[in-house]
Image (cartoon, rainbow, N blue to C red; front, side):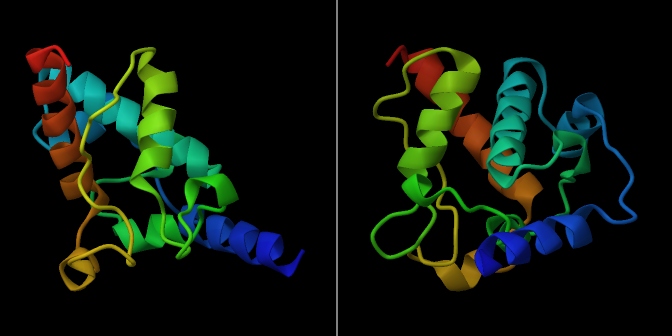
Length: 142
């Protein structure tokens, strides 16, 4: 029970005093256009749903590690407690209504390889890279 309270208080602190940001403004700020923007918005929506906050409160300059502290879906974590790429991919499949088997998303979470670099990664950087990979995956027709 204490874990849920902790996650809930982290969510409250995260959104406290934040201005809402539209999907269009988010996509423009991370330089995504056309299909890439749709995919970036889908990724943002997925992460917001996993964090149980409104997507409008997630800004490009938010840190990946900030968002990860609000994610508690046990089935989305691997055996090491690291947020699972597979979990995000499955959620993206639901959001986009398409199969994404074989999609390789950018690493997400402190437990992954190269965690030192990712501690400073912004959500905008992660989302732009995820959208680029999604766009390439769809273009290849996989």
